[in-house]
Image 1: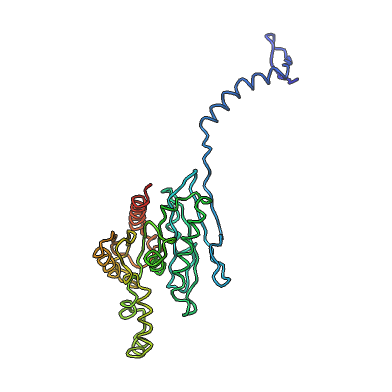
Image 2 (image 1 turned 90 degrees about the horizontal axis):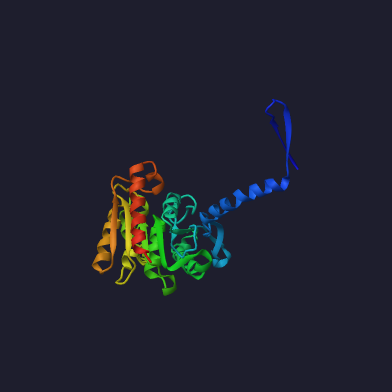
Length: 306
């Protein structure tokens, strides 16, 4: 029994005793339609999921990992593998490419931000291309687990990561092929960069000039230059580059676009007027931050359409 208190017509306090089963019937009368309405408006789609520290390869026992974000829903979703920059010797998958996380997620694109072998040992320079290819193969092999479409996979790389992404897309085997590539202020011609960049001290350049070491180094740089691997049938490229970049000159992307279009492949160059090197620094300008992100998302949606 449940007690409720009221006042009689004579002003006397009275206690009304209402049978408990009666209240249950009233509650049930209102609860059933409310629950039905709630159920009709509830989405049962698979929620968004985050993955941290997933190992995708272990060359020579070194664990290479990625973090991932998968949109809500059943998929399969288009996806992008992010390759951070850092001059091949440093960088972090959670820092350098962080400005891209939110716009990709908002666009319904799954993303995988990878770590790779850094070239702190000169003998490892170039090995990271194989790591990017391994990441592509891993995501494709586990596409059902991550609810992504293996046929709608893109590579996105910034700075040195753009060079690695471009090389993986241009020189990888069929199992590592992707649908599209976005390269932000990427060094595409390493030979030209080594000969002309202000970042290389003149003393070092002069010391190597005319020596056997010079020819060996330049030959290796040529092998790792995406501009030397352009071919017909390559995936479409979107090049994003600041016109005031002092580290990797804007002309690197201009010449890459010319080489790609001459080969009959598709390439778009999106200039970021007055911008220097690095999307983290671009975040300080709302106009720059919004414009390049919007173009990347629009372009990816076009290339990764079902």
